[in-house]
Length: 338
Image 1: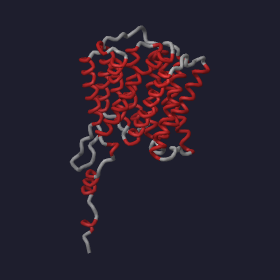
Image 2: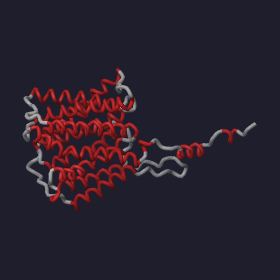
Image 3: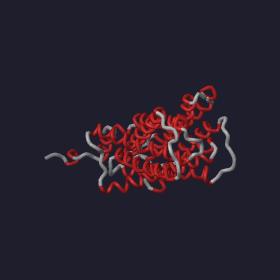
Image 4: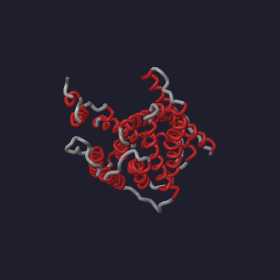
């Protein structure tokens, strides 16, 4: 008769086996970093491309209704692209359960409708530098909302420190040679802060909802719904696309691909990882934005390379701090949260 102690694994053996089990690909640090940086590079390219698109389509600066139409068409097309790509990969149209449609509505409200409505109005009433800095608080807010509001993870000293260091990098890259503008206003920086809060809520929601529904389907359908609402609001306020050109339509197509691909990848990462582990990479958005704007808008000679490198170094330190594994205790269990 076998010895029961030898027939069943001990606690230490079980812990050791779990440590030896391979981690899912999408939770490995190198994979999270690679896919998150692709998303950030795509979003960074959107900043100069939106400006180019406005020029190609004849949208004047500060014409918020027309910007709503532009954004609405972009996001509707982004949703169609995301759903079409998933249909080809899965050989069927991605589906959301009947209980999942209220989740799509909530995501569309937080991720697309509220965020971009307040963001576009805020940008038109705030200085570029201060608006960029306020918008960068969305990454910090994602960590706070996930930990304190949705209780999805613990708020540790290491996470707060990583966010603070990354945010310092964002400030450096935005303050160099910039103009802080006049007084802070509710319709300027205030609206951008509301947009940042809405983005933080949407990140926590997608982390939760993706455990129950296909994250690509959620992102695709919420983009279509959010785009319909934004474009409808823009048209109702008298907005339009004043000058339709092949180049302008091509730019909308590219921006739609940026949104569809980047947000779908981001949603998949949020499904398999803690919110803070993914959203900390959002501090790279302004770095990519500054560098790509300098290249695409012909401003390479004025790019502050030294300050940009310093900002990048600080952001990398912040990312490493947030993504560094918790130290294990001597018995093999995870160490206490700090």
